Length: 352
Ligand SMILES: Nc1nc2c(ncn2[C@@H]2O[C@H](COP(=O)(O)OP(=O)(O)O)[C@@H](O)[C@H]2O)c(=O)[nH]1
Ligand SMILES: [Mg+2]
Image 1: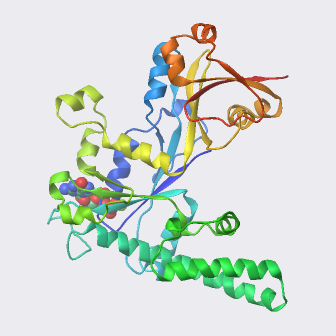
Image 2: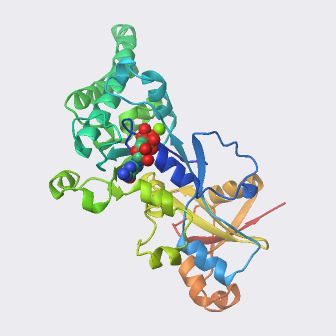
C-alpha cells in the first residue's frame, strides 16, 4: 500500500524546493527494487523512533521503514479549474493522491517573484480551496445531470445519490471543503466513488522561518492542521545528522515532522516485525485485522493464517528480548478477529 501525498500550491511558493529536500531523504532503493521513481515522485522513508529502538535491541542486517510517496504537482494558478495554466492536468494529478500538502508562501524575498500582491499564506490557501471546490462542483453537477433521467424513471438509488450529492454541492457553494464535513457511512460510500479534490485530507505548510511570519497572519491558521517550515533551510540541512543539527542549533528536523504528519493524515497505523535479517515497519489501515496484517507481509500469511503472537513495541523494548517478554507473559496469542494496534510487534503463524 503506497500512500501518496501531493504537494500543491501557487507558483514560487517552494514546492519544488520542498520536494528536493524530501528526496534527499529518499529510502534506500535497494530495499524497494520494484519502485520506479519519476522525476516528480519520491518514495520517502517515514522516520519512526519505535523502529529505531527495536533495531537497537535486535541488530539485523536491515532496518526497513514504512514509506510514503510525495508528488510534486506543478502548475496551479487562479483559474486552474477553468483550465488556466496546466489547469486540468494539474487537477487530475491531485485526484490520484491520497492527501495533499498545501505549500503557502510566508517568506519574503523581493527577488523571487510573488504571484500574489503580498505575503499572505491564508489568502493563498483560499485560492487553492476555491480552485479545488470549483473542480468538484463541476464533477458533481455533471453527475447530477446524468442522474436526472434515472430519477424521472423513479429509480430510488438515483434519488438517494442525488440528495447526497446535492448536500455536497450546497456545502461547496458556501465555501466549505468536503474534508471538513461530517460524513455518514452511506454518504461516504458515494463520496468515495468520485475522488473529489476537496475531500482529501490536507496539511498546510507555511513556508517561512518563524521570525518572518507575523502573529496576525499565523492566527488565521489556529485550529487548522498546519506546520511552519523553512523549506530552503531544510533543503540545506537535509543531509545533516541529528547531532550536527543540534550543534548548529537547528532543532529537530522539520522535514521529519512533515513526513510523520503526512502519514498521520490518513489514519494509518504501523506494526513491526522482527525477522532473521530485518527489523521492519509496515503500514495498515486502522481497524484492519491480524490476517490482513499477514497479507501485507505475504499473501500466504493471510490465506493460511492460524494465529498471531503480539506484543506492544515498548513492552518488548523494556523486556529486551522475546524470551524475557514471554516469561513475563507479555506476548499474547491473537486470532483471526484481532484488530491490530498501532505499535504492535507481530509474528504471524501460518499453515503450509
Ligand atoms: N527565502 C526563501 N526562498 C525560498 C524558500 N523556498 C523556496 N525559495 C525560493 O523560491 C524560488 C521558487 O521555489 P520553487 O521551489 O521552485 O517554487 P515552486 O514554483 O513552488 O516549485 C526558488 O528560487 C527557491 O530557492 C524559502 O523557504 N525561503
Ligand atoms: Mg516547481
